[in-house]
Image (cartoon, rainbow, N blue to C red):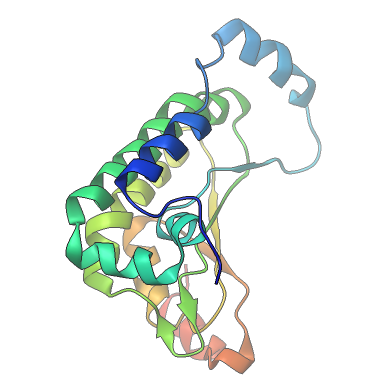
Length: 187
């Protein structure tokens, strides 16, 4: 029986306290470290984390699914924290570095499709992605890509609603209909 770092509200608070990044870097420090990427000739990728997939990884699939129903306030609290970290620590890097690709990850699908409902995705996860993709586009980043396993036939539409324009991999064994997906979602 696997024990996850987040098991209840108390362990969430303990976890959050330890994984929340420290004070954001100043513009001068960002510039100092980012300047080596000025004039790059290869694409730059910045990782921006994820939403429900990281919750599932830190509390297990069962709890990550049941809190959507049993304690939606807690899910909103976690998602608000994730968006706060995104704004304060990742957005300044995107703004300065102007990457060609922003990478995220969820692994929110299995062989049969999404493990949470589209309504739960829209309520809890989509605001993170809308904010991220809007900011990415304002900084000239053309690609926001999401790593996701499993059958994504339904999930692609939800990502498109949020402005995500790339996803990988599309596993044939999971029943992904790549040609159909490409026809329905040419962008």
